[in-house]
Image 1 (cartoon, helix red, strand yellow):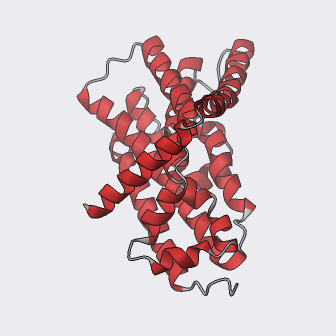
Image 2 (cartoon, rainbow, N blue to C red):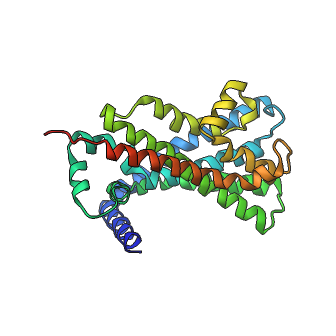
Length: 263
């Protein structure tokens, strides 16, 4: 509980700091919103030209788009300290983190809370609500909880990838671009149904980085499609937390091998 209280203080400090220059905060948030909105416009243009995508219509794909951006926006907002962790290693600031009687994960989480990502969050929420409205989906409590669980699980899944990316800095100093291919490239991939891709890509984003659990599996239930067994769709929100725990275990191993900068 003391750790939670400390993190809430980190969050409150970040809020006060970033709102101290409100015009800058608003412009950065709007820029984040517009960058994601252009991707949505490209999707609209594609469906206006071709009408469908391997049996999926615009509103169904918009739900994929919305869920993916909701999950990644929450991850970006809360995991910013790990996303920029290479700076902490290069500057020797991680040594200071190790001297404090607090969890390293908690301290790095609180080091960079990026509230300006609210732009992507807003776009993801708007796209999801629009898709559900246009599809006239009659969701019950179970489906609503599945939607929320899938988004939260997807956020933790992306968080696990960023944890592993940050851990690589203990050996490489700079985070490897390979991980950006998985995180930002994974966002672009998960905005569309997984079955439109080639077999090797589907296998990678199912067996290695299980992005299919973010929206493809739960949407099989939410959209009343039978692309995967219903049980897999209902259990999909658990995949993200499990992957995050794997990332956390790798992080702890990396911390145990850290030998300081020597500066």
